[in-house]
Length: 484
Length: 143
Image (cartoon, rainbow over all chains, first blue to last red; front, side):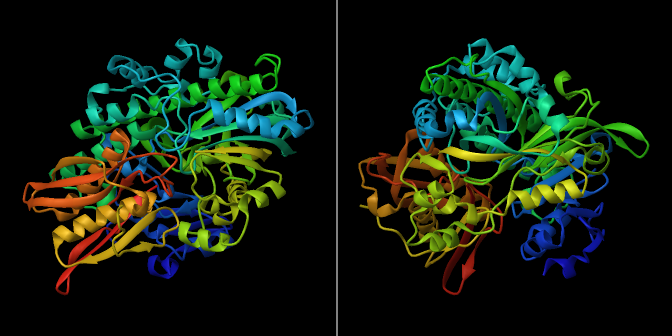
């Protein structure tokens, strides 16, 4: 069991510490209660937290959020900040293959009662209008090389320029939907080829569109600021940078593996390959990663526009009349240069969040003006058929976790086990019995994505709240899902 | 139609993986490719009407890198050419990498049921080593 081997100690109800040992430069900290730790300690993810602590220039702690599970190199749910001035590194494994996989939330002025009898129509409309599944093409045709370069530099703003949504959407997107420092010259031909006809596509795996409604309000004040009310219908969009992002990660891992011995970096795991932020390789990765991140924001902006049109069309109304508006967009897989308080001063740090969400509090300049008094919305999607949560960032998260919190639930069952459990069951009927209507691209079994294959996101969010690194605002109940 | 090689699916909560044995390295690499596509789609539904000669460069002496680059190249073909691959014949392996003839069929949603979208082979728990008289390979894929 990981606990004993690593000397892990529980230091408060929801925080466990892995003391420094061997080549670890800092201790590790895992945010979990006893129940979550029971799952976590049976897999290798605590060892991965300890491995990340070996990264040169890492500051304070190698952190893991309550939804931590086994990834490659970094655990999913891992957060690590390095100090570039102290030779701190950037590691592509600390971001993941799906660069800027993230989620956005659209609110409406509809109530659940308004759409109760129309859910199947809405899901069908989304399914027809948003390309999804393997091999799906974009709704906007294949981009030229120059157009794709513009997307990689401008991000969501490119999509707005082309008529997908409005400028107001950019204020309600993390980073304004555009990470600076994007360098298309660092993106390979192969990555460009993969991205050119994938803009405006959902992809597959755990990407989805979800119609739901607010079924619980925990913080009336924050909910009002976000424009969310009990019974209000919502749309979640969950997707990332598609083949372009995967290729950038793949290319970068090759470059970093060659860089590691050159910089004399010793790592316990090859998948933690990295280079100093202030090196050619480090800058090259950040430049390429920003391109992929911007592609993902443009992707979510286009998909949101397509989805809004589909919903308005299905209901025979207009987007304005239905009050369709973006609440916020967050990323779950990213590395960013951010200013944080460290040892009594502020420093610019390279913060990796892999399967983790930024959670900044009221008063931070990065929080949109409309939410300045309340804090940044934190979107935590459940998996198909389960609740999702909207939370808000906290000061404690700023102090403890570089302003980070969890991103979702994570699996408890492998696909093989999930398929076994599903044998003989009519899953679509079961989901329908739970009040969720699903349409999925391809003939793939739903078994692997059923709620029973995942941890309960409510448990994860409760722990995040108990630990003070997020505060619940509303809970969303799904009624219709489109799966890639 | 393609035939799935003998392999085991690794139980892994986050992703999917394969383990297999082979009498030699060449066969091991061919079987790894076939197993990957079998996981993606079930080789028994994939015919042969498309062929390509593929060259993969790898870091000298690094067979883990060779395995990962080989599988990544085939995934790239799947995505860029929209072909499912079912036959693999490696013609050359040396310090520089490998050359292979691969064959398969264009992806047709009516004919081919995609079971899982594999994004990339990873180095996580990767193992490619001599075992007894042959070779044993384990690779986990990001999904």
